[in-house]
Image (tube, rainbow, N blue to C red):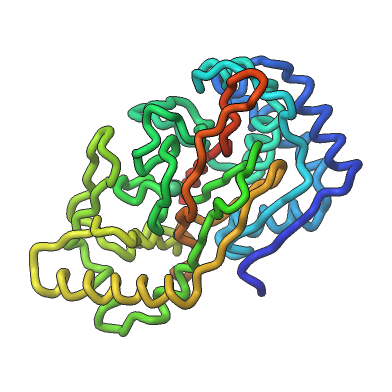
Length: 321
Ligand SMILES: [Fe+2]
């Protein structure tokens, strides 16, 4: 089976999503009651709109065995973005077409869309767009490149899946991904066994609210056959003893070699949803690490002085295993 699948919606399917999205107007209900709305309202509707092959692929992913990454393009998106410069105001004022597509499709995964209470943007839908004041940050509101990582591997309940929906792309800014299997195939058995031991500390990298996962394996058995690979290209994995230190060194060598030879990338354009397993998969080490290449500009539209930046929205889904 191929590791990734790429789908394009028909015009009829796109129109159905547009009508569904328009029905929310500017309502912020998807931010306030995301999981409840997804389960009760969006999931049955979206399952009917999407063609059977996409629904089947999403259900396979949910079982941890299908494609490890997929794109769905030709989704509708919000055309007239508000002109206010403050991101939180723009989020409230914009129509909710992208949010409907993002939350609706993720609802088929059947998990919980995670809230980031400690983050600068609480709730389940996160804005990934450069903000002038924070453009130096290695985060969703920063503007530079981001090294390969799996999302939030420094907490026990790491997201199983991650989605990025592109409202506005930028030429030359690419989302990169690297298959975990391309890293693991470069590790010897001794290193793999060492990475399964609970002798590591895994640390968050941003400066907001420092978090640390202690006494953790890097190759972590989550139960029922699901395995999390707590991989970072940066130095975020630590160990006190020689065995752990040696395994970390081998892991970094494997990540660097895979990065140099096997990196893939996609330049997201408006109306494309990227959905992938967040280095968590059933029965084997799988899924992808992600990162970003290219500096984003902080643009203004000539007429209104409004922000005209690349803008993605993100949702993290956590399954119970
Ligand atoms: Fe990320």
